[in-house]
Image 1 (cartoon, one colour):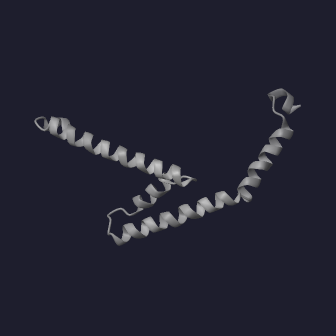
Image 2: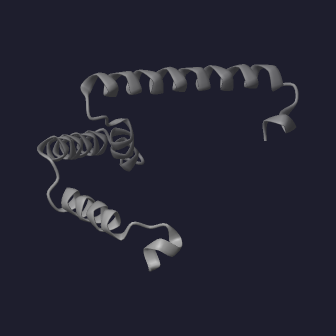
Image 3: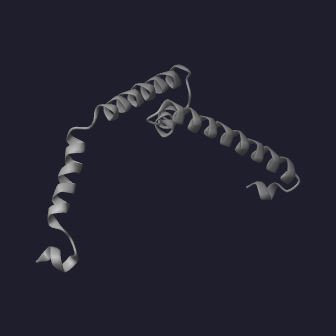
Amino acid sequence: MLGGVFGINLHMFRSSLTYRLDFLLRPPRPAILFALRVLVTALLALLLAILLGLKNPHWATMTTIVVAQPTRGAAFAKGFYRIVGSLIGAAAGVAMLALLRPYPAALI
């Protein structure tokens, strides 16, 4: 009766829930390999940041995780766009500083 009132097919809901739980409890091999690859690269980034004496080494780990993609081609593309965006942002900051230098209050 409940399914008919709210339009929910309880059998489909149960099978969908079983599928989701099965995916979480037994993930496919590519998902496990991707997770391990991200873990290793994030730890290497953290180690390198610590060895370089960076003030906030956790940001290297965060960047590694954010840029991580299941395929290497997608990871390179995302990393490239991240670098290009950072360069554009830096150029915009320098341009704003140059244009607003006579007005220090605008820079606050």
